[in-house]
Amino acid sequence: MLLVVDAGNTNTVMAIHDGHHWVGRWRISTNAQRTSDEYAVWLLTLLTQAGLKRDQVSAAVIGTVVPAALYDLRRLCRDWFEVEPLVANATLDWGFEIKIPNPDEVGADRLLNTLACHQTYGGPAVVIDFGTATTFDVLDHDGAYLGGVIAPGINLSIEALHRAAARLPRIGIGRPQAVIGRSTVPAMQSGIYWGYVGMIEGLVARIQAEYGGGLKVLATGGLAPLLAEGTTVIQTIDPDLTLEGLRLLAARNPAPILGRERPRLAESD
Image 1: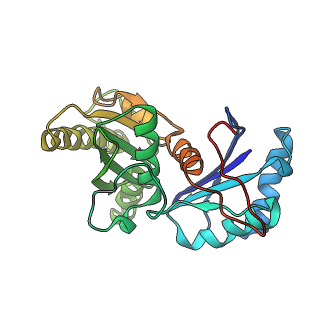
Image 2: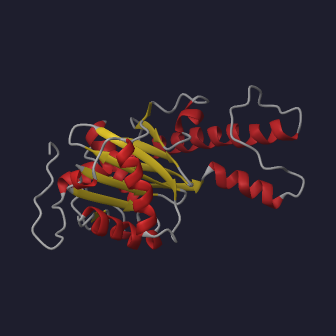
């Protein structure tokens, strides 16, 4: 089975794929100070509750946009599962061109979303990922990565609004029934929600116009379903897009060696 680790700026998701299905999926807050042993205590407990054993894990793949977290995630795989993890980066075989001047600058999550979108839905397309940052990534009909847009995530905007304005409270995210707020909190909720919907629609329209139209629009990330309620431009929601990208990347690349030769991980294994 394959251990998949998606370490974002806010949350880290670990999942197990048995070659056919996702059989476990768990989330923990990202903390660059968390040790491999702390990860292991958490993950092994959850594996046991799911009826899985650590010796069933035969390969691992890590995608992270937090470099400081990589050392202990690697140690988790090596020390507790006895596998050398494949680490997503621009030098691997992605199966598509990365058509930007400096491929190393692209976050692994953006390439992983591109890979999963191309393999599952085809292109051309734009993938919107609602994470700590909100990213828009464009791929052509061959799956080539063309670049995209990075905007502040919705939670960052809420926190910045609260910190910068002394009389504005910290609010939760929700879809207001009315655009015109009748008091402070509804007005803030409207500005955040409908403001983001407006940003999504505006950026997608500009991306479509610049590309020449015909782009499918996919969304992933925890807030994708909520924001998709307010617009018709999002055609498909796939909450597992990044995890699927990691699985596909592991299938395309030889598993790294830990002490002895390990076989290539085939998609059907």
